Image (tube, rainbow, N blue to C red; front, side):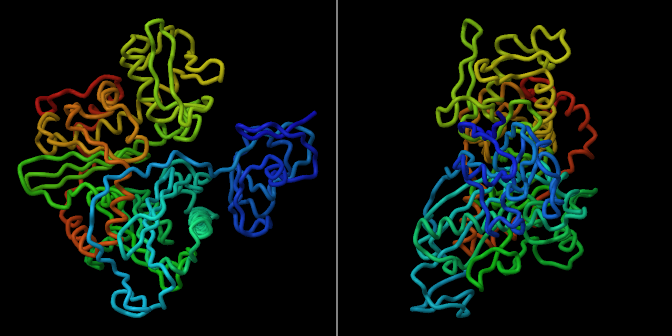
Length: 548
């Protein structure tokens, strides 16, 4: 008897002649759609882990997808074979923790009696709420904060997986995808996902989307410009600059910020709603890093104290600020610490191993998000695992696992659940870690300081909020700044997007500060190759970088 399966659910008997959407209904599996399952909205993307051969060939509506992705409403089962699938959109661990602080509201949108004003001009009658939406548009996950523009208070925070994953797990693959025959599909996917979650908030909180009057977006240059329907191809080739940045450098624009009407982007809000894309800094250092600077109060570089900001993600950004100078760089870390390339790697969903220890008997002890049965290992768990393997001597600093004479030896981290870690996994993580290492090491050298000279290291972004800082330093993932100077700032990009949403003053200050930041292209630094090789080693970064 053939069955259809989805993770964590009881398998159902499979009968040819039904679609995967039909089986999702049977499994009570939430798959989004807004076109009544006719293949138009492209929201119901699913990932087919096994049983592709049981499905009919792709319909014309699915031509924008590659294996292993299908549209649930189009994927008709035609063979009596087992099928294993899951929706592309899953619910990640929400990183909504920020460092809340009182801000006097000074938004672009205000109320005068029963009139709603946009920059002083009447645009609507007051409907009961004056809302804005701050968005952190990440490569892997998207976070949204619904904000009361009259009080500055956060009303609701939600987070979900970026549905653009069918175009690749990193920005370079998505740039290539968007330049092909299916141009526009990535923008459509993210716009429909935003609309889906806006509608959910409206239903849950009892308001209408027309009460959202402004949206601010923080994201790397590729993610931001894809949403705005801009040509992202220049970002994928040297000198890796957005068309917006090029226009700014040529004197054609006064800022790298971008504003557009929401309806032109397909985002459903008030008909007058504008979407403000925070300014890009330079090259791959984007609006998400700009938002971090707002949240961490790094819009000036006065004083003798030096601050290091590290925003860890698929692309890791590093900024050093102080002594009258701000320097920034981007490191293409890739998706290894966010669930990609590692055999049992996964994003921070329920069931992900998020911490690992090896006890005195050599056995693995771990915890999982939500206390669920382990399904894989997320970024914070991978950092712990690497540090523990080094501490116990079960892995060399070159990433060679004990007993590594076999071609690709595997460790059984959670043997009952099939969660393993291999030498190949260690190799992928070494290269991802090396990118983070290079960004910090080379920027410290460029700035002329050692790690001990850093007064504060702000650690921002996805799994960085959950990572064990001591373990991250031990494997060379973070610069060896004294642990009491390392501050986790949660989702600083979302907080920064919220602050520029409710404060025109911060918005103006940010645009002015960004123009004065020096950008370092790491690949052009003479020491880059040597630093990358050193960074591939699982050992701490030298405490003195200036003497090397």
